[in-house]
Image 1 (cartoon, one colour):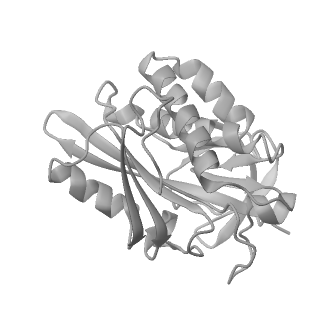
Image 2 (cartoon, rainbow, N blue to C red):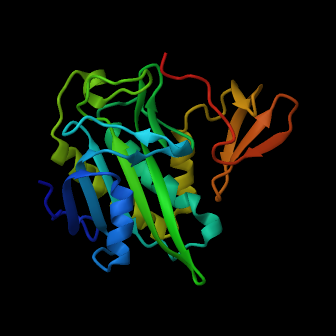
Image 3 (cartoon, rainbow, N blue to C red):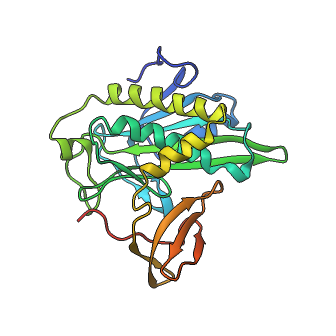
Length: 256
């Protein structure tokens, strides 16, 4: 059972724990619309059966071994065109905590957490609600492999698989929420340059030449920037810069 966090300002003061659910993001959206959740509310599930990933993928986990939760945030102090700064802030907070155990962990655009040569540790999916007035709220879904050792497909890994140690899920959860809150407060204080610098400094393949896939074709280039709207800016071999939206580009394999 995950308890209300005592060492945070607003995150985790309202925790909805479910033993089983299809998607913590869907539950969080439902609770907000029913007036049963607000900024800082968290939905956490021990066995998530239909967790969402990028590209419409399903995030599958072994019950009781990992962390799957969603945060409700209200970043209405930002313009929708700047929304990727929220992604950067939360990603930074998660990476900072995981780096205490996995020093080589990196963020893979737009929102995966990987250890090159080992595999994917987890991911994040932000879903937003807008109105005529702008950004109403955001639901940040997080899935992290903590103690799971066996996976149905190649690519994923976990803290335990890499370090050989078993972790206390509630302790990792507490550390994550505390750090995410600090990053979100920095976002509210508009420390965007610092947040972006940290994000880029730990971005997989940043300023490194590599071969990427785009529309069934491959090209050589390097990541040089991530724009406020989330677009990836790449410098191609001919010196020109090109921009890519989510799902438009595929990275080279990083787990072998």
